[in-house]
Image (cartoon, rainbow, N blue to C red; front, side, top):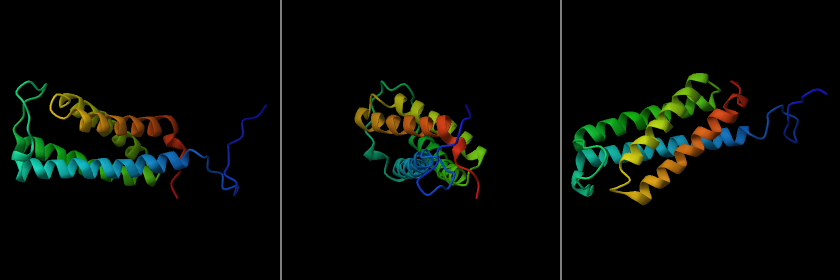
Length: 139
């Protein structure tokens, strides 16, 4: 019994999971953009963030903003690597999504709803990239 690759109706040789990988890349761009936006707000309008003293991590807003901007930019770059079928894009995407999830867990006390949404998006990215990431091939 041979294992055949699942194909789309057009017979292109791509599995249906390629759509999930593209979806993960789109979510990575969105998540990276949200991190960049959060970082810019932390840098220029830190009074917007109301954080209590009982957070897991206690950082200066300037440091927090720079970390979010750099991480978000890397996540957007990794998304384009994923779309190009690059292993480094998938690897970086998984590592950054993991870091994003951990950072958002650290801030659950301040923004529980927002943090849970971000963690859920991180889990979707990790799932798509680790389970089916190799199904997208470079052009």
